[in-house]
Length: 271
Image (tube, rainbow, N blue to C red; front, side, top):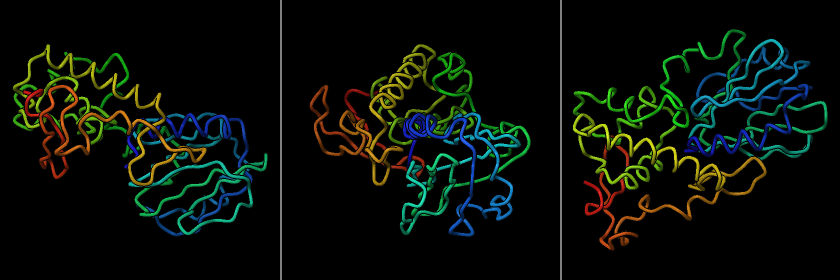
């Protein structure tokens, strides 16, 4: 699944091509992604200018003249800029054709993504209004995470992956951040001290920033808006390295299921 760095990379890739551009045509080639596509948008969106592109968690927000398009890439979706008229492939489900001859194309093989329009404040939308803080902001710090974890018996990895705790820390980056902070992923969230939470929030910020700089992580189908893959996968220290030696101590990396997700860690370096 594209995680926060991949979505941020996508935002940076498409923004220069869509901001201040006017939508000429909206094309739907399916009736439903995760939710039904509203066919009225094919009449409502043309003529509106895209004024701003933002990210909230793993959602992209395209602010138009009279409302906001909320996009989600689902499990394996991508957005690309292609010339208008480019022949569509099997999983190319939505096109926003722009007046400059370019097309913003949503590809979604599993149809788990979303293309939603709202004419009210997008941050009050039901998909967004209960989300936790952004991990790269000052609000997200050790004191905040320690307070949120107080009394919790839940393992720390699913705790930091909960979008109500903090947004955008998906499976890959949760494993990597916990390794960097030296915390076992199965440790109870309420049994981690404030100093260790300060280390963890710092590690999360570092890992996500490094991944964004590297252009995201290529796992399965993700690629950038220009079609080039992300390269952070070359820097992964524990994720998907089960049985391989730890880069610090040399002991084998372990893999266990936590919260129904594969979890990779070093039992020597993490406690």
